[in-house]
Amino acid sequence: MYKFIWGFSMTNNLIFGANKTFLKRRIYSIISIMAGSAVFISSVIIVWFNSSLNSEVLAEVCDRVELAAVTLMPYMISAVVAAITAIGIITILPSIKVVEPAEQILYRIRELAEGDLSSTLLLRGDNSLKVVAQALNKAISNLNSDITDLKIINRQQWGLLCEIRMWAENHDCETMLVFVREMEKNWDKIADIEEHYIT
Image (cartoon, rainbow, N blue to C red; front, side, top):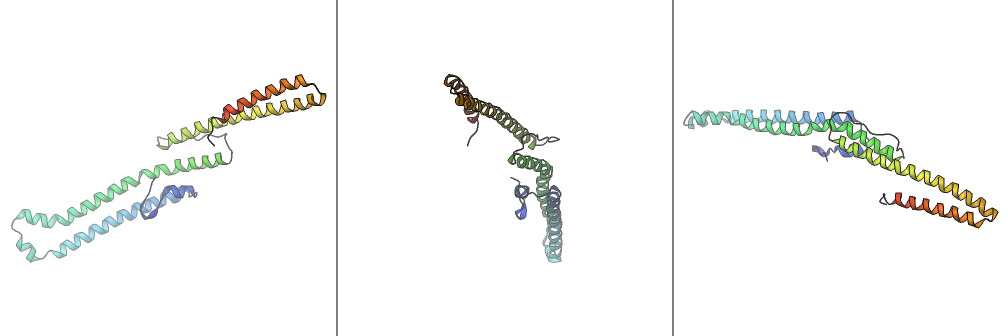
């Protein structure tokens, strides 16, 4: 899961149907806040160190190495703050590429929940969610194939039931048994298809 600072969860926003421009703006605002905070913290550290250095502290410094260490300390701390911020930003940036494919997958799952088995999901580019989309397409294709088979078998069953009703009305028992056997074969086919699904 992509979990960001201040309780921002991309997954939760996708589930509730947030649009991708909102999500991108939110990510960019987080990056801006992180960068601005790093600049502010670095500035405060440098100003505080420079103001705390007085002539007495500098007089106690024995040689040039100690003077350089004391003088460069705030800049080294600022560099560490900048590095941590850069790592945070680099960690967040890839999530921008995931927003649109994740929304497409969510949209396709909603279509599936409404019973649409006809369309497929096509993701462009080289994305980690492409594998998820391909697996979803394969699962939907298999489900579509099985449901099509069930519809055919159910239509055949209905036809056989109509034939049984007609023959039963005419009292021809031997012919009716042939139709019953055909129905039993179809029920076995339905049972084989049902074994593929976990309920």
